[in-house]
Image (cartoon, rainbow, N blue to C red):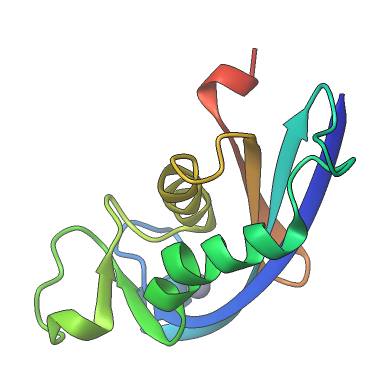
Length: 134
Ligand SMILES: [Zn+2]
């Protein structure tokens, strides 16, 4: 099995409603980083899993253009103009953001296995696609 990874970054604000950490209830920002893992048993015609350039183009249009410099809000938030917000139910934790990215990219990158999102330099969450986790 061959695996490739590619890492991206974006800036966004968020807040959490359901958390034991009082600081997380206030609007604040993160320099998020995320890593995609794509896997394939055999290499393609070009001896690649997928061309990194193709992955980069897809991620820009499907993920980065939608999340960068936006506000990620819990399901029930309605007070920020809609063009600036991305609703992530139930709330925008690193875990939920990882699944949000995975769900949107899987259609365009069928070899996608997992997405890891770093909220800080030392804290990350990984979502592994259901069919890949067994
Ligand atoms: Zn936060």
